[in-house]
Amino acid sequence: SVSISSTTTTTTTPTPKGKEGHRLKFEHGGQTVYEWEQTLEDVSIYITPPPGVKASMLHCTITPSHLTLGLKGAPHPFIDEATAGPVKAAESFWTLEDGELHILLQKASKGEVWPSALAGRGALDPLTSESVRKQLMLERFQEENPGFDFSNAEFNGAVPDPQTFLGGVKYR
Image (cartoon, rainbow, N blue to C red; front, top):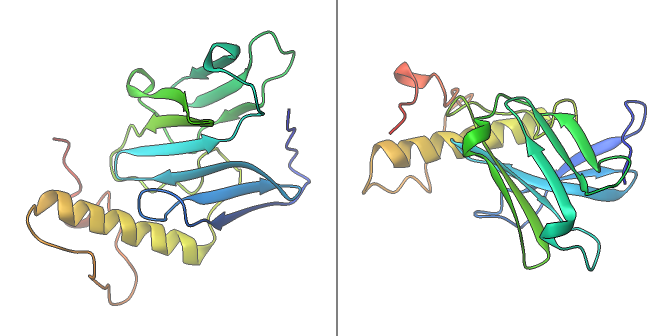
């Protein structure tokens, strides 16, 4: 169990993993607690459990504003934190596959840029936040304009908010 207090140093740094290399690593005391990434519609959290842990041994609860994860019967969960944004709990889920636990949190507000996966834990620095906004804007452009390639698009100046730009995103 990892206990994260507000007085200890935590960091969030990019990793080469993920769909497009957009995973961020949340560390505490030099140890990776989890990696995470976001799209227009969801936030994914990835955890490497100890060897031998099976899905049937885990207890995970996802609510509209909270995530709890731990071993069944353990006195304290590994994670017991508020999410960094509102979640559609009924559309969220978790799986354990190939030695990696994947928790998918469906965003309640499509296009919202979350500053972290869990509230107050490893908030994005301004440069990384801008990079995430760019990634989500390009994803939005691609979704709204199928057939066009926006992979090399550049923004002049600050990247707009993908949730509100030009009338906001539409759920499909």
